[in-house]
Length: 381
Image 1 (tube, rainbow, N blue to C red):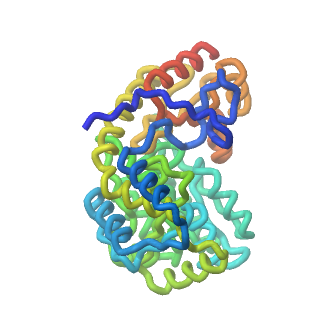
Image 2 (image 1 turned 135 degrees about the vertical axis):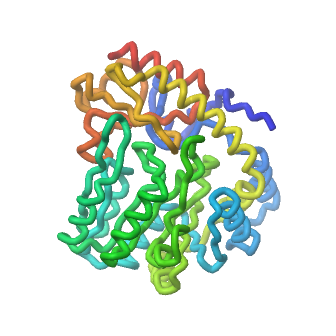
């Protein structure tokens, strides 16, 4: 089927976080897309609205079967229905998981630059943050395995928050990299929480592997956090799924979620998730083709020898722009791009100090908007 990803939609409505900016600014900061959902999702929501009764609701067997089917078809990952824990969002789940599986003061490791709520939620829950920096060589980021293992042993790390695929640097970790991380954690008694919310955005040269699918041993010490929210632009409807095969961990996490008093998905979250996983495959395939073109536009606009160069994303719809040749800090770049170019990007140092001199750009928008933003950015430097 043909989908119109070039269409411009008015999002400047009250309460739209992405577009809370002047009308002449192009917002490309927060990670949500400017594309309408597939018609089947809208139809499912309209059907629920017409029913007119919005009492308590819960996911049914079809919900679980559709989640399982999606991950089996897309990734070859076999999930059992009892392994699925629902929650309003991935970060909600991670907060509950931290409280369920660690104690106050315990050490939790992250690899920066990384999605900034990771550090915030660790600190907010009175755990101690341990950071291992990713290494970057010729525009490609990698784990520093020796540093990770050393810090796990030195600090007695209890949990590792993994971002896979990685936000913001766009890496899709290989099986070999994931196995090595998994074995380090397995050998040192470290639980892995794998945020795989961007796993559906993988480009043709890469393959996403759910870490928990690599072995039964790794599955037993891994909690995988997923959601349809990024894939289908449903963040405002608040639905996510954590996959936990270990019954002891699962019981603790379910207890922690219950303790929040917020443990039921809303009616529209259930309806949209079921429609997305039942009907959304063709739409997603069309979107990935469109985003491949977007990635090529960025690659041509920001070549390696230019003041701003693209760190080629293997996954996600987020571009990590290396602006270090400009000699400007992320704060100064942010100011120039926002106030001169009128393009709103995310400051690189938000994701950790190693992100200073970088900027993150969300390219999940029509090509006409992307090319206009690129022209403005290049003109401003």
